[in-house]
Length: 321
Image 1 (cartoon, rainbow, N blue to C red):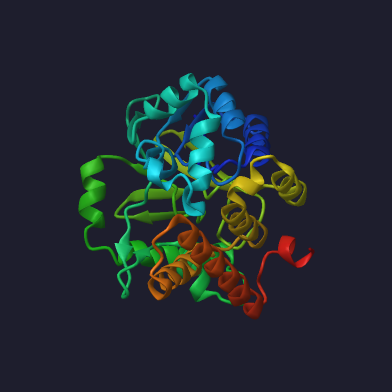
Image 2: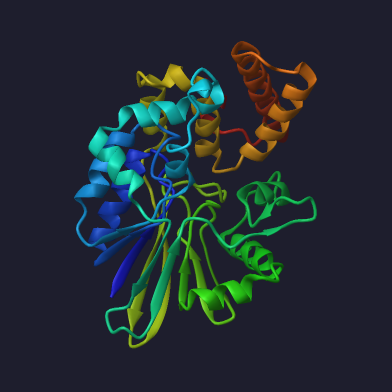
């Protein structure tokens, strides 16, 4: 049995198309999707249409889907939440209903019934010395501030982070599964802990593990054994950037779109720095009104740009303007 494991599309329609083509060509028999299909780029309707049309697919929801159920109407004018409102508005009622019925977890037996796969969007994370989640793409960015991590270094970092979690063995035993599939951290990796394979296919649409392209993982099961092959499919990232910037929705969430385009082009996590600076701006300015909060958002965005320009790793999309 050959599974194609895909996570974190984040609205990147060309990346999803590239991965599906590659997986079908590679002989994938079943697609396993791990959430966060939309929001960060404005192609939610197209992506849901493709996902709903796939035969032999299993889906769980991610935090981007959960957010759509908890949007506060009072936040509609805030740039921080604009992309979420645009996503919800773009979906037809039947598409939104499909998204809302997706389970948060799933257990899937292998065809012979001998093994079980456990699907969940979020990884079983621990906290680092500052109380922040680990493994996390933001922490990886801090560990490799001026050079890109290799695939082996990403896997080593992920394994070390998982082993720092004293609750992990107990959690894995509770799932009763041979393979734990997850996304969320945008770090493609395969590590074994306590005899369980923890597999993250990376973010199909917004990889933050210092490598461009559209990652996913092929998982093979044969004669009671699992083997994984990490794949990364090339597609025209620069063309997609231009498409996003020319879309009618771009200006309605320009700041959020710009932040994600920087991340897409650099394949690095800028969110940890950005949200730290946003919190500082809100505290300094005591932002109360929508206008004041949006001004704080754009000041934090400018500071983030300056921070990464000083580190000389800002995405090429911004440098070329």
